[in-house]
Image (cartoon, rainbow, N blue to C red; front, side, top):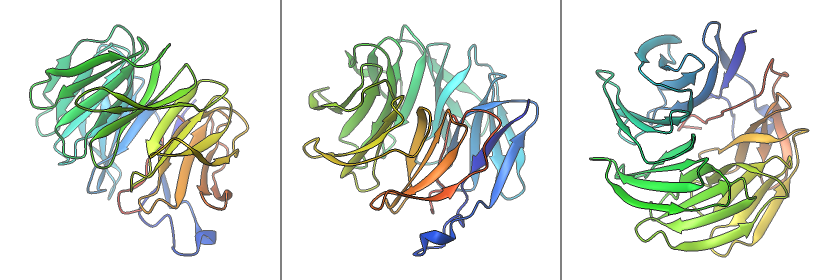
Length: 294
């Protein structure tokens, strides 16, 4: 069975009228089932990790694959571009963090985790890489040489999601222990601990201005928290099964989410209103991303 992954392109929204949200396009992977994806910083390319343990880079103008990154020893679970668009960082079932040079396909691999790497994130200045793993640890590395800045136990159970704050000073994480936690990058000091969900957390994200933390998980709920004090700001329940992945729109007004109900939804955050609902997909929606231009 083919898996279809939905790409939210720059003209998905016609603002300010969110009633005009439409799906512009989709890409179908017939041979390689994609499990994770990321937009390039300029919005021209998408990278997709697949079941064949490769990462494909698509040119969105013609939907053609322009680069195949090969050589992984396990399924890629998470990936992201660096801010300059020259590299891709991935993590997966080989327990490693891999940095790929897009131009020539070369890679640097870093060990350190004792379980599947569920999430990777790159700081806005491109200086640091963070990874979270089934071993419950977060490792923060220097991008330049891969050396560890911090390696610490973050959650009781696996770390399913990590995300740098927009100012690059902090990192938020979500885990199998149902907790959302925030950390200082250089000291690994825990600045927030939020008992956020009744079941496992699958994803966490900062809003574009860094004021809000969104979390989602197996309890089918998406929660919004103040990044200053951890107070709950809002909560929405739009999925019928657990929520796998979330992403803020660049203006911070919308949240796209995908889950194990095979649905991709776009919700207006303040109103809690669904403004876009995809056709039911053939399989789970495992990864979503917004074009940097919205």
